[in-house]
Length: 527
Image 1 (cartoon, one colour):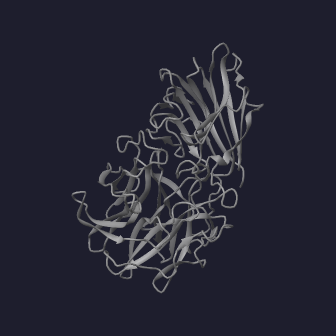
Image 2 (cartoon, one colour; image 1 turned 60 degrees about the horizontal axis):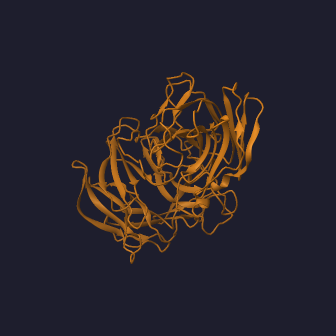
Image 3 (tube, one colour; image 1 turned 135 degrees about the horizontal axis):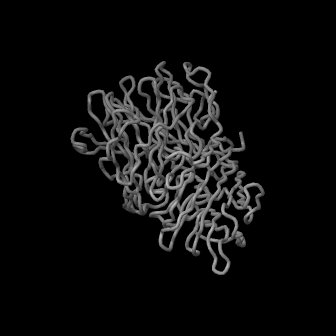
């Protein structure tokens, strides 16, 4: 059996694709870089990160983008000759929403992708459909700023000229209204047995989330909704371990079996906080009277699903513990950055065996800050690092962080206090309110390496430190780890990512200081 989710931790908006005997899943990254993560599998069980097409700030700059802006729902496709990737870079989030849609191409999935080509800004979640008559169509939801209109004002499409790289003709509605669940988005089309099937996400990305399926004989419609609607939802099932189910994508195996990827969240409590963010699940599909249905019956995806008949005895990876020793000139591929290029203001060669982080702007900056972090993929884990850092004033900081947004984080850091010298302290930011929940610890002059750790146990997080790498002392009180979740933060703002843990450095004086990290271990404990 395959256990859901298949991609754990912050992996939302999956786009499914098969080319030959190889499957691909592309997921969104929002403000984290490198952008768009594409995974590869030959059995739908074992997934390997194979490509990140957006690697440079030169391709798309997200400097200044809001929290949970940046690269939204990607759509990956193949036209028989090359791969196509559509993405949105979301710049603003007010009554006007700047949603810059781009397309990229590549002959091979792991090759050199073309630079993004701007397509339109009429709405987010763009997708590209390659019709069997050679025509191509771009579709997206239509964003409407007018107060007397719904913001989600239908789903539109327009023909795309791949040679000129532009839209041609007039845009037209695929759906002027959705099913009644509201917030119709994420449109995708595939063709089967003479029908155009239109798959949409509806109900928003929270506990009301769902996917609906429609079909028509012509690309322009009209489209009728499935009698088995919604196709996927967890709304009527508050006790299911998989919640927020929606935003789906289809794939067919070479043997004619059908599966669907979908977004899901796993709350710590019944409809509580989902610290791991929106994850990627998968379900098996059966066809009834020309309509897709979940093979398990009903519309609630299950935790365990049958693998493809051709999969064989593959053991699914469930433990994502990692041990980075920084003995290579490149970072492990699970590390990410905020907005900037992965290797901007960091070095793995200036001091071999260490990751050197040069301090930039503060941890609240929407522009340039130096943070190297990885997503949480388990509710229960321990993260450890060892750091050497010689700050000269209080504006220079470095340490270990639990992070969700610039306004929601927990930070154990080393800095400098006048008349004291180096200190170790704890800062938190909870719904934009910053606090220092502990008294600072003076670091003895003879101590060169400071060891930092954090233990996360579902709702709770406890930082600790050591000066010898053996005996650890608690740093501050137990903190509410579940506050680093979209569910909690949505009291103040709409956010869509997940919790991260990592290393960071700030220099709000001259941006000259640096911290050297000897390792970063992330050890999961609940398997």
